[in-house]
Image (cartoon, rainbow, N blue to C red; front, side):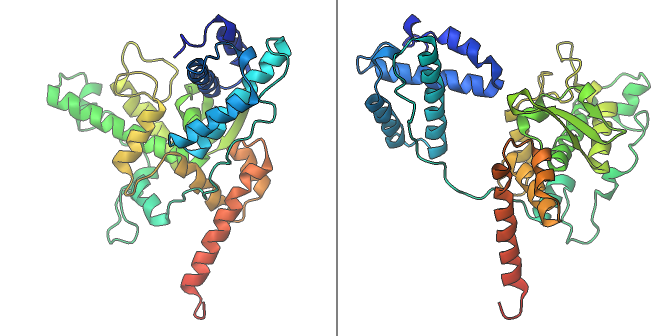
Length: 335
């Protein structure tokens, strides 16, 4: 794809300019501009100076006919606006053809919010409505790492069979699954923020996590006791069982290959544990909605989520309103 975006497109210089943005935005914007350059080349347009507003609008229409989601088309339009604005400031183009480039607005769907039962099944592995609820000791004291079982045998220096090693790894990753899910719901952080966490970002005694959000903005987010206990169990018992020689020493979470946990790995955790099809971002939506349902101030929720604009956070007030209507309709005798 990059071959079509030849030297005249100055992609390396554009990529360096994008370093002020998040790594994810940088990758997406560069890929979007290169994809446009490849498409434009098929129409005989081989340089940004040849691009017109009409050509850009044709490209967005082409994307729509190919079945791209409206949110994806909107992001690609934003990438092109950023690129051609940069070109105009550098004198690559005389006029910015993307200055007022419109794109279909993203669908106004309300964020998915897990029910309390779905959340309990996800986090605790048990139905709160069922008798004999198990998993209640998850927020209690951590078991002795030198006690019975594969981890205890390792702590006492005894040789383990391949089956015991396999079981120990499975138990260790189960502890990580618990910690990942508890943290996503407790702090409402983005998946990219969770994957980028280092040990120094955790203050388990103070119940605070420091995350690096969009635009390299740092924020401190409180967590509850259950999340802190799950993190402590993973770090104290599980991580050393699965970490390899190439594992980043400061990475909080790791995957099966011993590398830093990635967004796809987090999605797999949800696929294994969730009773319903669930995206990791749903835990962020659920946390924000539950805080507002409980009376939290909108600006407090904005600060916790790391939203630059209060308007972004206000979507959760609509979610709460929808939930209120549903509860009212289902419980009021005359509704």
